[in-house]
Length: 512
Image 1 (tube, one colour):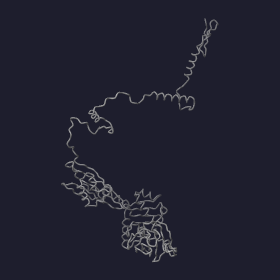
Image 2: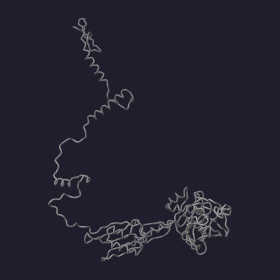
Image 3: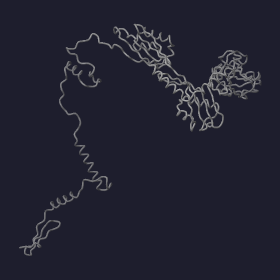
Image 4: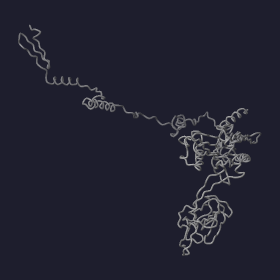
């Protein structure tokens, strides 16, 4: 017999020791190979292949998880099936007749020869048509291009040559065809034609010929009839006022003044004050623009008519554009025009010989040089230094071809050694107008301009003269100017927009 406490268990090897009657009996241990397998099983049980790669980055466990993930991805990619075509047998090609029918019914790109949507393959049931029906009328819109002709545009739209010339002649009796603006759109209706060998007849033509006129040509009783449809137009100027603020340009644009009119307004102000130093943020601008509104809703703006500025410090400005003596400029409310100062250089070259005593390059003795010599290439245009009247234009001895201009206040200028003269005696010229061309006529060693200035018939140094001129209105012209200015200042704010609403209401009431 043996007792319970006589049995012991081994911790590591699993061997047991038995005590029988006090005698120890040992169970033989497993072979070495079995021990190694058991050890590997224990280690494999402790190995965790599922690793959170977001924790303990850089540790041995993290790298083991990374390599495991890469290995699994590579295994999935390498064992994935291919997407290439599956090998198989090809069908035999169609005979020609069957191929044509299949090609017509196939759905494939036209570039590959498909006829889908174009026609069906012919069969015995198909009967050819002697003539296909045409649309009874055609409505289209044509646009007049730059440099295009009205008759040529109509022919391009499908109107016959004779009828196109007739329409152009009819429109030319109302207004000049050359006055039609490029981009004018015309609505045409072409009628039925007797056969395909002739052009379609014109049944109707309508377009906006002018801002205040619409023309329609309609076929009535076999003849083309022209109708003029006048369009009511209101020409009340548009007046806009506002505070200058931090920026005159931005404030005027925010008030609704077009950009080109803001620029013209600023240019008008610069003739009287410095911008922006002469402006105050509390000053108020007053702008009146030429404006036209049609009853059909279209609007167009013209030129800037009035430029006003109410100043918090200093004299208020009120200027209106007026044409005097053939020149349009800005005049103050008193009838005084803008100031023009300085004498314009007659040619863009530099001065090579000044006023005073010098050795004459040809005569070889010292004599008085009564003007300035400007170096310029042969044929350079010569400009009038200031407004004046041509007193002489022709040959003047050693001066060669010469033009002499008389100006106000007893002043005169002359331009010598010209190759060609571009004005005639008695003509009025403006500052900057071409009066001739640089040459080397007379006593001259090369192409240049000899420029002289006179006061009361005596030569003076042109460099010493710098004068200003200012146009002034008087008499009946001044009265007309002030009357026009009063009419403009009577224009209320937003009167143009209110009148536009009245026109639209009247048009709606008179519509059939």
